[in-house]
Image (cartoon, rainbow, N blue to C red; front, side, top):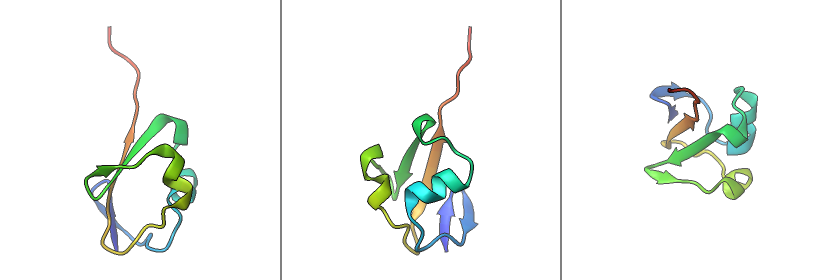
Length: 65
């Protein structure tokens, strides 16, 4: 099992970029932290999600005054 944004997810073995796209995120609008390290965007297509990973997908939001 993998923890993604605080939830247990059965995503071990999946490609990170594919997971991001398949779950509805727009890759250009997110940052990804894996096991307390920010992953460079150009590596996402080479990263395989591994059992025990803790991943945070941070989505950029506009707004404010």
